[in-house]
Length: 357
Image (cartoon, rainbow, N blue to C red; front, side):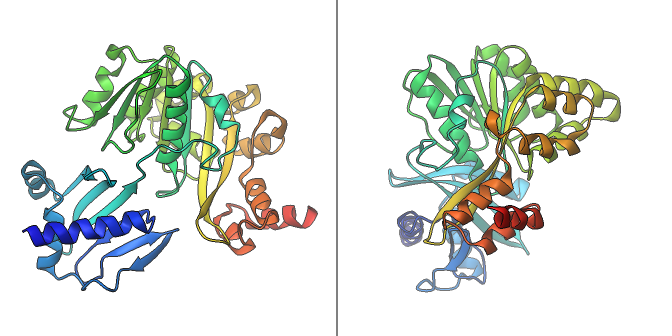
């Protein structure tokens, strides 16, 4: 038992020291790290047998969590290894065996500058109400960007910030703001009960870890409409796709009302990709959509296919087109053309941009 605990701690420490984003434990594989987006097996460790994998993974779980795993076949939770590292953990079953994916959560919340994000993001922390979304593929920095935005408010404004997370990722140190971090199952029976009680807790700023469904979207928009600043994330690829996803999650008879509500409350959408740097590490490429009168009209009229054009022609307002962000990184030799094309939603347009510059 103590042996397994030590083995687990050694693996967690290795992940932290090598600045890995993830650690994977699965039967028939070496324990594997994800570093700068690439999976790297830890070959000095033995390949995991069914017994070894289960013994290691069970060290992560409390007795209550073990019961949940037996009943529901998977479980999400956060796990701290002393004061050295924190992880967001998903334990699940595959082909009858237990497996785990552990996402490393940095100890300190980084600033917008430290994350190399566009300076316009500072402006989003200064608004008093509305709905701001950070979107992009899984593992591309959405939670980290959200934490940077929330922590900037914490250091600059006397607000009550409430977060609903499953599980809690970054731990905020209260500064000027009061921060109430609520973890699903630990601090609320479930995600929806936490959402329903939210507005009774006198928040100024609300952070919902992830927009899961129609109810979470409706709650966020209602909160934004009633004078709150709301931050959340979605797994979408662009601003226009995000707006379509939100509206399409409601039945047809409600979509007109939702379009109007979204047009009135949406402040901005930040779409983010983490691109491997030429010299190692990863750098963000962003699309930034700021809701101006033209975009509000397009949302209301369900003409989201025209939003990309508005972003492209509104650079003076702080909007950024993803291809322009990628092109800038190629020109400054931070990323390769190959990586830029791989992450572009329109590679032919990207090539034209680079040829013109």
